[in-house]
Image (cartoon, rainbow, N blue to C red; front, top):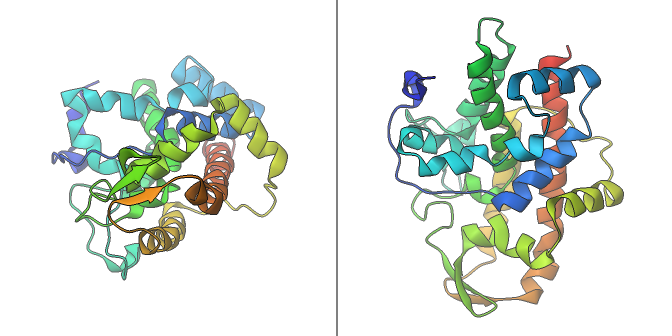
Length: 254
């Protein structure tokens, strides 16, 4: 497939943002897998040739090393000032994560979309539902969603974005299957509505404001930060997984 045919998002962005790291994204995919109806699972297997959403969840980040996929970098985030909400800002012509999720859903529902293209959009959608639940993907443009906010993590150089992507998760030292099982055993999925990307970015942005407000440049962070914040990380992973599964069921089983 000629990836650059998606002209909506053909403007290059040099902003390198990653969400959750592989363990986090695979945790979201694993949780979503348990929500799928038999028919949805069958349809996903036909599209991907592999039923594992955990495997599919990291593809979008892995492809960022390929120059052909650079035009899709803006799909991973939606930057906005802390005092504005997504519905209040001018939408980027480069695209953003909300526009990308809506596009992926529409393409997957369209009977005219080829199987090859469906695989493309399904892998991106699986990734982006994880991304949009990571609060720093609704961060400020001027510091690249926290990438330029330097911190010390147990004495090592890091940044605010990476802290929420992977530092805390890596410190937990669970595999994605262990973390998924732990979250499903300790959290209640009742009342977690699927909603849509517009609601999700609003929700994440409220946490974004709190995270920025509780950090200072070059702060030395360690266990106290984990104690205060890791429950939110786990909540966001769990909610993302439940919502992804529900969203996929609404696409393929209705």
